[in-house]
Each structure stands twice: as structure tokens, then as C-alpha cells.
Length: 554
Image 1 (cartoon, one colour):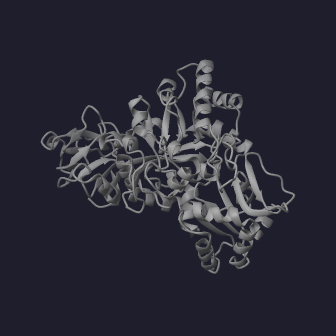
Image 2: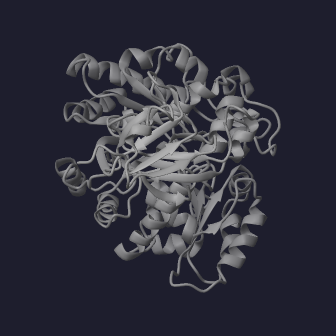
Image 3: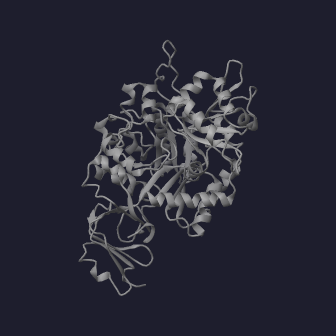
């Protein structure tokens, strides 16, 4: 193999995320797509040969590609491509107007799927009861319609969709879910948590060819915003097979980690397929894939009052009693057994725990598993952890639990304002304590939880929010707990090095250093030379994956 570079990028401000060599001018990439050397322009001159392409960066800011630690890959891209777009601030009337238009558009799919509604529409659905379902029926043009809540933990269905799913007055609530009912017992159309799965299962699935098209569009989207890696937060066997096919065809220009749906708490859980995924998880992965984590959903979301809280939710209407603290899908003893089983298999476990009671239960379970299986087991993931209490923060480092920080609700938005209304300003002020987590020595990584909360995947808006705790767009004024903002240099590893390491890909990506894959992005601005709010507008000049240009030009 030649010791000369295939490509040398010089004259840049290259942030490597490698502590021993944090900023360099130049980077040399070999024919295999791996990094040969990093250093000064002069130091790398000797790696240029007759076939070497040399590109001057003109002082551009370069960094490793973004690795999103928590998203829902294929399902979110399918929604983006094939659903009626709603918005979290729309009223119920505005939602109906969009369905009226969308349901009249011809297409190959009978079902109308719309995503996603937020607090204003939800409040009207709750208040109007069965009348809300009737109003949706009136604009559906004889088609089954399912509206998805922005959290991904609920939905609202019209009468035909409920009929197709076999959901009616006699239908019992599923475990960990609620079919909201009118006084007569008939469903109002509102479905909380696992009750939404009853209708979602009735929606015809995309065939393999369509899913491959969705996957290719998703990869292009990710590369375009600067992503060269992601972790899918709850993965089915079918999803693994689609990505394996993409990888085999050379269409997977990003590292793909998978959190396997091995727990009955996961949507679409199938015992036989779960057993197959567990046994064959390595052979089901192509060279750019890894599947060494399992998912457990322990609680729900604040917006549906299903996140498990230590104290009841705030009161609703004047005079109404407070809602209780929300349910959990597992007792402590059950959670210990489930995590311990995966831990013995060497799997990291990503536990969805948002409420402070769920967070504490998750940490108590990991503590018991460490005592049972030994302290040297795999790192486990606290997914969300939004309402973690101050007393539980130090436990993450002690138990080798990584804070999976997402979605980007650490700045004011429609969703965060809705959450604050449900728990009160005092309790909400303590959410997403990122600075405190890092100060306590906790490992942390950032993810988008795309497509929940925000319809677009926006790592730069999220980064700006992490360092300012403000909405960079100015749509929502104020800031959320500004004392928990962190500096840019502390935030960048949470979007690059840390998630790659937590996905067990740290020996391949996440930093720019010799021997690692040349996964890098060239930005249109120097993040250190602009106001923090301007980070949100960052555009990608070029994305390289394994040294190959996959977006833009250079």
C-alpha cells in the first residue's frame, strides 16, 4: 500500500476532538479512506505524491461529522416523505384544515398519516371528547386518518381508522396504554402510549423497495446536515435487514448503530424476531453497522402525563384534582431482571426514562445489576432523563451510565413550554441540567430524538441551544435555566466523540486522528468566531465519509 495520501486538506482550522492534538491545519487521507496524519501544512507536505489531490480549505472550520446518539431513522424519514405535515403550535381547527386538504390529494396509499400535533390541539381533543373525533371524520373524505402526537407516544384516530384497527367500546385498554373514552364508553379517538399501537398496526406497511428508497433519502438528508453517524433508538428486525441491504449496495454513507427492540415494552415487539435479532445481531450487520444495545421503555412523556414523576402533575382546570405521577411499565424488580439479562449478554441497555421517578428507578435497577453481574459490565444509557433530581446526578458516573441527552428541549419551545405548564415552573427549572451532569463527571452524548418534537433534524440549532439555553430563531423568548449552559468546546464532543464511543465505534470514528475513518465536515462559518446564536444557521460546505465526498463540494 502506498504511503502517500489520496487527499490532503490544508489551510484549515481543523478541530479533531482528539485531546492530544485538538486543532491542526491539515489532514492527510489514505486510499482506504482512513486518516494517515494530522498536523501543520508543512508537516504533511511529504505525504503528497503524484496522485495526491491537495485542496486548500481557505481557513474553513472543519470537525468530525455529527453522530446523533438517539433518533428513529426509517420511521421518521417515512413520516417526513409520506405524511401530512402538522405543527406543534397548531390549534385543532388548524389541524383539521390541513387534513381536509391532505385527504383530498390522490396517492397510492389509502391511509392519511399526519405528524405531528402538539399541546394546543391536544387540549381541544381532550376537552371536546367524541365531538373531536366526529369533526375529524367530517374532513377525512372517507379515508382512515391517524394523527401522531409530537412525542411519538400517542395519537388521534378517526372513526374509520378505529374500525379498521378493531378498536371500539368493548376494546380493553392495552398494558401501559389508554383508549380515551366518552362517558358512553365509545373511544374519543385519543390514544395514549401503547393504545396508539393498536391503530398503527393496522396501517399497511411499506414494502422492501419503498423502505430502501426511504433509507437512501434518509442518508442523503443526514449527510446534508453534517451527520456521519447515528444510533437508531428502537430497531426492528425489518429495519436491520433494510440497512444491511443499503450497506451491501454501498448506499450507507454513515455509521449506523442500532438499539434492538428486545423488550416487550417496545413498539412492534415480536418474541421470535427479538430472539433472532439477539442471536444474529452481528451477522445482520454490514461493515458500517453495529447492534450492541437493547431498548426498554420505562415510562411515557410529560405532555401526555405518562412520564413517571415523584410528585403529581400540576392541576388542569381550576378546581380539578392534580393528575397522578404517571405509570411505569416495569416494577423495580422486573426492570432489574430485564437489564441483568441483557447485561450478561454484553449489551448496553438504553432505558427510556423521563420522569424523576422513572430515572431513579432506572438507576436503582442498574445499581442492583452491577451488584449482581459485576461492576465491569457494559455502559448503559439513560435515555432522556429530563427530570433527574440533583441527588441522582452523581450516580451516573458511579454506575457507568451515560446521559443520552435529547430531544433539544433545553431551550424554550412549544414542547418545553407545554411541559413546564404540566409540572410547574419550579420543577421544570431543574430539567436538562447539562452543566451539572458534566461537572459531576457523568458521560453524556446528544441526540435529536428525530422526528419527535421538531419536524426537521437540526443538530446546529440543538448545539446553539445547548450553549445558550435560548431559542436561536427568536420564536420563543427567554431562556431555560441559563446557568446550565455549557461552552462550545465542552458541547462539541457530545455531538461527535462521545456518541461514537458509546456506540462502540470510538476506534473507527468520532475524532480526526491517524487510523480512524476520515469522516469530517467543512462548515460555512467558524463556530468560535461568531455569536453563539449564529451557530444555529450553520450550513455544510462538504461532508466526507471514509474520505469520500458524500455532500457538497470541496
